Length: 458
Image 1 (cartoon, rainbow, N blue to C red):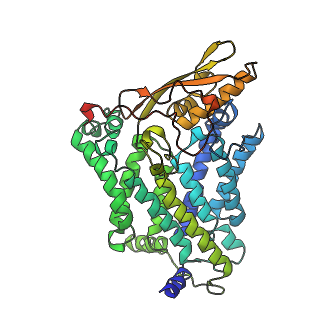
Image 2 (image 1 turned 180 degrees about the vertical axis):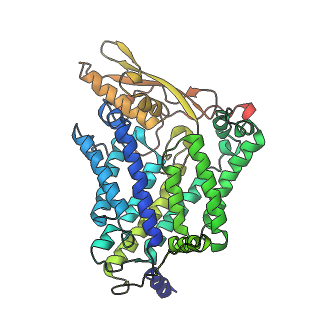
Image 3 (image 1 turned 30 degrees about the vertical axis):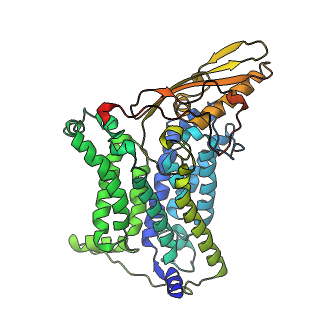
């Protein structure tokens, strides 16, 4: 059985589906690059801030000064274009991974699930010949297997997508979501929509949306694996992501997910679709099925190492979303284990904060409002993230040391509401955060969730 499985992994299949995904992936990242470049987001997010929040272990990643940060973004656009066209693909996809990941690591306040999704897909794209079909590389030079890839090149994406889609449903099996929060609040914001706005106010509609989302991901993901149910599941996902685009304005994420979901169809689905169109509209289009060129795919030592890496990569994607079980308390409240876990659109958090800096030698105190140092986006994100609150407290300690305060004490006063609950303290206001070391373990200075959902939400 193992021998048969390994032989199937190196079986040649059409590269058409992967080529379409490559072009969609690069094209959507060009759209994101355009938004950052022409809407002034580069300066707003990477030049103007005086302080940036760092991921644990990546504090050394720093933004580039002008004009280098703009050159960095220009390289993002160039590499995304090269990936789309399949031009110098191997160099372009690796360069894009480095460039994009560096930008991702610059500020924790800019975290988005679709950025993380892009990085994971980018890693797999570095390992597969997505330029074997419909690319400039395939036109300008002979490739060993033009028009074909090995089956494992496609399976790597399918396994990753199954993990992502299943977790997107599993994480929603929690107390608040099953009690229709925060979706009741979010849909209520769109009460002015024609026709749908009135429906959004009805409890049964919210219940269908809440429970339907769980069912879609937990059952829809496996249904994509079977030919008979694949089209139905795909149509349901397309409807779901299109609605999300208009409801939540979440950038390229819905379209990137739809593009990735197309990989579940037959590897040569683009030609099948083209032949159907030609027959439907009596078009004289010739679709020539390519034949494998060069030597057959072989299981080399390099391929075995790649399989081992992919196995560990996929295992990490299974385990990382589970890490919140290591920490006590509610993950939606304390954020410990929230990121990189596909906990998407799960909670509505609103917080307010101020900090008190104290000179223990003179007992002089200063009240600091975060917006004096942070952008609106940074301040909003920090108010709901204990790890970012700790980082900002350390920043304030350094700031006041530079002003002559030898051993400043920093105290955070943060009140937050989760999913419409009554606001309560998030951080122990008596804890001197300047003396707290940042680590990956449990943080006892984060106060537990105090209030239940309001009665009207139950």
